[in-house]
Image 1 (cartoon, rainbow, N blue to C red):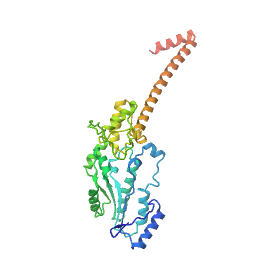
Image 2 (cartoon, rainbow, N blue to C red):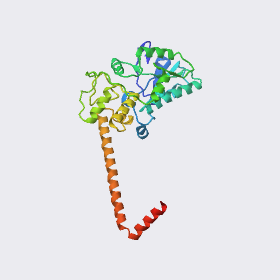
Image 3 (spheres, helix red, strand yellow):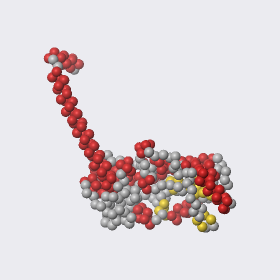
Image 4 (cartoon, rainbow, N blue to C red):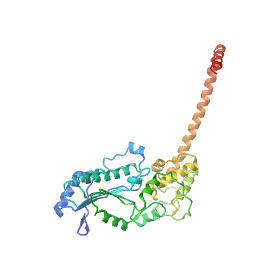
Length: 330
C-alpha cells in the first residue's frame, strides 16, 4: 500500500478471498477507499520451468497466484470504484518456450480476464505483458552473457506510467525488440553459437567451483561455456541461476545431441538443471540405449536358436511340403 508517498506493508494471501476481503475492509476503514491495484504476483527461475509430463502429472493451477489471485481480485473489485486494476502478465504469452507451459498459460489467463473485464465495461482493467526487467546489478551481469532483450527498471517505470493512462485496450505488450521477429525466432530451430573467449573468474553467489571429471560432464561444461562466457562453469552450476532461458536451452540441447549422437531434450535440462545432474542423466540414457541394443541382440539369438529347434523337429515330409509351398508361391 502507498500512502502519501510512504509504503505501508500489509500481508494477505491473494489466493484466499477471505483474507483479501478483510484487507479491503481495513483499507476502506483506514483510508476511506482504494485508488487502484497492481497485481504483480509471479515466479522466476527454476519455479517457472515445468515439463508437459510433470505439469499433467503433478502441477495444478488451482492455487496459482496469477490465476486464483486474479479471479479473487475480480470478485472483490467488480463493484468497487477504483481507478485502475493492472495485472502484471508476461511476454511469454507470445514467445513462450519449452518449460513455460504453466507460466505462459497463467499469464494468458490474466490477459484474457482483463479483456473480458473491458468487454463488460470495466475499462480500468489492464493486463501488461512485460518483457524481462533488470532489477539488480547481479541480474545485469547475467544478461551480459545472453542474447535476449531486457530493460532497465527506469525504462519499465516509464512504460508503466504510460500504460496506466491507457483505457479500453485491456491488453498491452511491452517488448524492447521487434515482437514479430522474436516470435519467429522462438519458432525456429536453434543454431549453435560460435565459441567466445571465456573468463576464468566466478560470479559472486555461485557455488564453489568443482571441475568436470567424467567424459559427459566435460562435454556438458564445454557446451554450456559457449553461452555463459562471463565465468568458468563448474559441476554444481545451475542453468537457470546462471541466467539460462528456453531458447538457450534449445540450442544447448541441439549441440549436446549432435556431439553425443544421443537425443538430449529440454525436459532433461529442466529436470536436471545442474551440470552434474544433466551429465548423470545423459550417462543413464547411454546405458539404457546400450542395454536395449544388447537385449535386442540376445533376443535375435534366442529367436534363431528357437527356429533351429523347430526345424529339427520337422519330419522330412513336412520340410518337403514347406519347400514345395515356397517354390509354388515364388
